[in-house]
Length: 597
Image 1 (cartoon, helix red, strand yellow):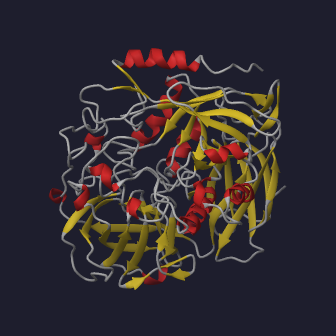
Image 2 (image 1 turned 120 degrees about the vertical axis):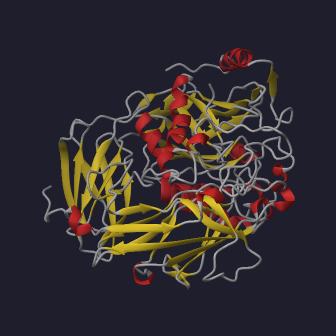
Image 3 (image 1 turned 180 degrees about the vertical axis):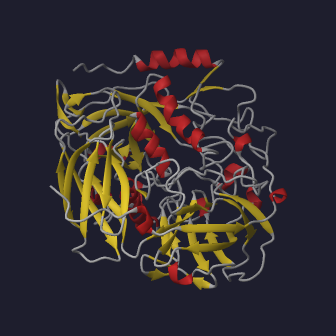
């Protein structure tokens, strides 16, 4: 049984050879409360469309699609499991009194221009957070010519917030450029008036001063030129709507991750930076908004049994190192996670971490990667994380977890997440299940230009900042094959400069310069990573790099009723049945030269 979002046309496998606190924690009642009631279009205005190529007759929703409707909240799980505010630290539900999920039916229409349609209903509806082109959105285009590049979203809601509390509005991700208005006013992001640019990172606003008790109008304008633009957009192709095949996919425009609101105290913990690249110590920095640099912060490390095993105290914005006695390391065989409780006099959040190291060590034929000081053979899927019903967005959280859970059923232990940054809950599932993640930077797959460079650099920084706290991520991949690296030819953002950027942003992880491309031949960074289809070749380690077969396989068994468009899928090695595919993979996996510990 293949993971639900693995490309139906081809499957690639990758193989790798070898102190006491000075204050009292805030009580939940001190954090404020939030209640939101949304006024949505009638549920009857939504209906899913064909889950398959509109140029064919396939309709292949996953088994979870039947759970999606306009009568219930799609993807209701708490979207930020790495930092749960309030009571209990429940990573699935959060504290319901402090947050509200805005997913569901919104008004929607294509945009003729960027002039905001204040005060009027839009002409259609869409099921948020499913991308426009997905069958679960209800508005998927029937052809490449009818794909919408500019659009408006509208939601009207009432909000009751406890006196003295602030209210934050969060967007998990919007592809590609979002401009947000609340009650007729353009919102500020990162202290600036204007839009958010970038299709794969979260962003948010403090809407405290612009919120009303009743009749709030939230308007979102989205521009997504898909592959016609200069921005990193991965494997998305407008032409794939009409002509699927090869290794490109239907675009995933608009809101594609959870939209939610949160009540926080006037001085609140805004984010955490967790360095867990150790088997004994965790280093934590808590950033506080609305408080001074001297705001005291208390840290408490709690094991699986609920026992406090370490405590420390520090100040906002300052790194604190916490020693964990007799610590258990995180690994695929034992994905041990510690709870991390962080509090100030006015706020409290629950996070987690997994102590582990992943570094180069000496092997019999060159360098090799060592997990917690030991050689661990890593093998897994090249996961493009595309869904036949939700495209970029899994239909349910159970479905999202299923892809990660499936790894172990194949006897594998890792995923190379390819050309996409997933929602935080996906990484939470990898963290708790012990699945190693090699995280790709999203590429500009074709049509790269000099205009791509600053957008790529900005997205890379956002990716590292947004996902760096997850213990499952052990390595960053800067470039893939020849997708776009050739336009990076001028310092400081030439290829070597981009590798240095990743090292500077996150010195705790290994970096793969270019998975399977000619920039890999420069032998900088930590990996000699080759691609060879369909059969794997031997990658060679050196005195400075370990060896990795980053992609091989691409075995395709085309099963009636399981193809996006019958007889149009791409494969590197076609076989008649899934059983033949499994047999072919076993033979392939035996080919690379084995490097024994």
